[in-house]
Image (tube, rainbow, N blue to C red; front, top):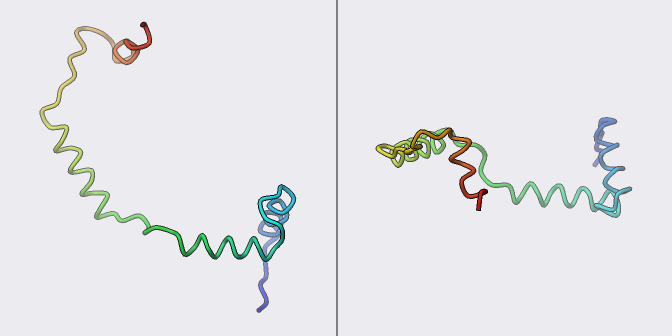
Length: 81
């Protein structure tokens, strides 16, 4: 099989070899193929929308009593001790 790489791709492979990430081009390709098989599912808009709705539901009715402090001051309360 013949694979044609762009100059940027060639530089990336040579950089990986030079820095010791991989020993040679074959190891680079094997690692790339292994990474493809371990990828999780891509972005799922439906699941993201459902998660956002759950977060909004959990936040409903939750209020932060700042007692006149700024949010910055409130966030740094623990840093004073």
